Length: 350
Image (cartoon, rainbow, N blue to C red; front, top):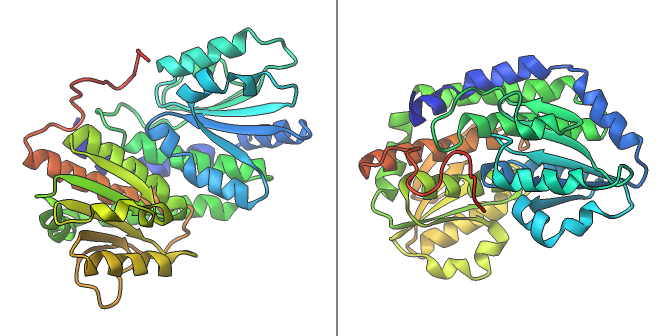
């Protein structure tokens, strides 16, 4: 098993997790928990890839009128534990691939000592059955992606799918189209992976000499920008950061140079025109640029075309492009993706 083989498994993993949760009764449980707690607060928390995967759900819930706090678990346990002690009811959505990371265990310790009336209702998203987080959850959801090598790939995209349905369950129930959208994303991943080396060749050649990376997106694809940057940090061991498009204009554009590779997500949606305008500005400033999604008219840069799809599931596809670039860049650098030097798959030390 290898990092690349994990990437190639993603279409089947998305289909499998859809088969598991399509019209599942578990969605009624979280809808009932929400309905039974008037004026309930909602906190979404995770770390690393698990934190990044929460972006689309958070955006969708806010659009539907549900204010959801999106918090790093380490900051929640040390700087915001008071959120757990307020008398107002709390639903806590905790995402952790292993369910065993040190911050998650600290969070469970804090919750265990709370009085019964203050304990939050917990929904968890993890990969394997029987982990500590799942055992302490009122609703345990599993991505069932199987064993993964190092850097999160298939566990990440399957987590996106589960959170996609969970967010819809909070406002009632997932609809048939919600499952079809994920299956369509799985098909687009499969199509992308069939010819990926030739598709990515111009982009790889454009960025292979870069010494740092900026990944820029808006809306749901912010998840892909942030998690793509994490993959570059972990597997290629080069400086990389994910940026919201608007924030990139407010200072970070000063970094533009041929040595900084900018990966810009240009997915169809309400901010497509803004992303395309930014692409032209980066091109005008001689930046090293790759666009991912819709091609920008009259712009000569490396481009990876993706089909039009529901923007809420597009992060399940556009992140695969970055995963593949990571695989190529790591190989070119003589690095085996997923062989951690200083960290590990499960973090046991704060």
